[in-house]
Image (cartoon, rainbow, N blue to C red):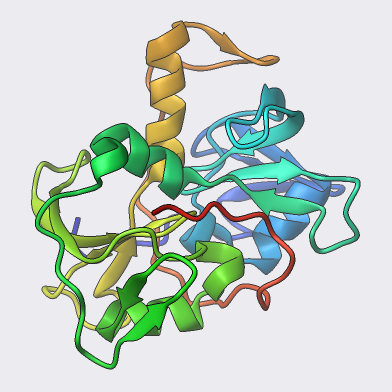
Amino acid sequence: MGILTLVATLTGGANAQVNCQTFTETGKTVCGRFLDYWQKNGGLAQQGFPISDQLQEVSSTDGKSYTVQYFERAVFELHPENAAPYDVLLSLLGVFEYSQRYGDAGAPNQTVSTGNATLFKETGKTVGGSFLAYWQTHGGLAQQGFPISNEFTEVSALDGKPYTVQYFERAVFEKHPENKPPYDVLLSQLGTFRYQAKLAAGGGPVGNSVIPREVPTVPVAVPTQSGPAPGPQPTTVLP
């Protein structure tokens, strides 16, 4: 894992078109409101590269069909029924991954943070230290969601190494004490995991997009840009 390197910029690694960008690293194009959201909410560092085209998908949260696009660390959902900026929402990837890995019992051997910690009454979980600092400076509720676990050790699906992690509704934070701040907290590639899981389950098209047999994994920089203030985005509260 280590300190990751920014390998594309808006003017270099992506080929700009009118209201669209095609990313040569993955061959995918982002347009319209999805591109606008990507640019204004952390871009490559927070969301990762696009790994699918736009497609229609039934939400695991409410059973409704939405236009979505997969990124390495997020899935964007188009909600034209909402006024901007809430017409683009993020799927609850942290909830899906946590449920799939640990079920109703949750992850074992969790530890409640005691360093400058805040208890979130909505879920009964505590966030502190570098995780709280990251949450507060990188979009908070709107980008990350509420915490749905306390801290625990998990083996990474990307490099097979153990890390201290904490699950949020839309993200998983990983501690990397070998890195200097702000690179000591990195985000798991939940978009990639979700995409690969759908491929494994169906082995072919998802919606109107054909999933490649191997989803590209591209090194990215850690976030340096905060997201918007929390707004009326849907949340799932776990026991």
